[in-house]
Image (cartoon, rainbow, N blue to C red; front, side, top):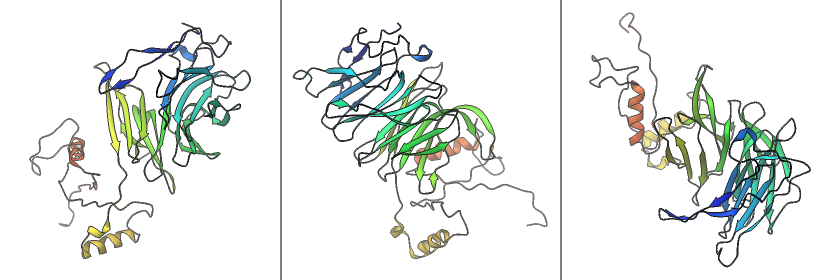
Length: 362
């Protein structure tokens, strides 16, 4: 009900979860505005654990305020603490995103629902208290946040109107102008590169054509700027997703996919890799160097090899019986590519060739 938000938490180990315990009851409010969560949706909340094992939860209290609770690793000896995140003036907060760091503290990104131009804010929790004044980082909504090993915060959000934007060290960059839905996720890989994921309902083809489709996109911050958005998944409906990096810098992504037939949680692991040219023979090294010298590909293109080998000729939309014994499938050559991808160590490369009738026997 309006203004009656209750937050519970459980601890899960080895496939078993404890009974839910309340972090607070419906009588704990951080705002007296009386405004309920926007759109009648469930209030936003997030949770994080710092390097000392202290758990923090932050939630929208249903009236525009933000409550929080901290729980040390030994909750029996130190009971949970709770309070309110300090917000400027009469601000009403909306969506929240929480992560651990810097140090043993926590970082919180949130948007506001008050005012004409919604803004995204950054707040720090250190020395057991929140900063007195959160920092505005941009204009938009539904932020995601990450703190890197250098203890710097990275914030991504859906920009005003459309697109995805990222803030770091006071600088704002536009990742894409494609529509943004849900909270973008941001993390850094083992090479220190930013990865941003977001939901969209538009697919753009190579010729600039647009089509309606539910997609999960990824873009990577490269030396020359943000990479062209790549499709990570094609969920039937928008759903929750999350991305994080483990101690080795490997990226883990989980997302919900599925429609009327039932939803399922999917997981993917992304490992950054570089190919070692020392494994090539003398002739192979020469060919590799010629390809890298330029004139054959755009200068910024990576020349991958990773012990690749020729696998097969793929026909589209479906093979002609005169040239292949493979049977036609629903998605034609794309089904063949999907099967090849399942067996690949890192990548599947393909070159596109168009058949034309011979002229003058050439």
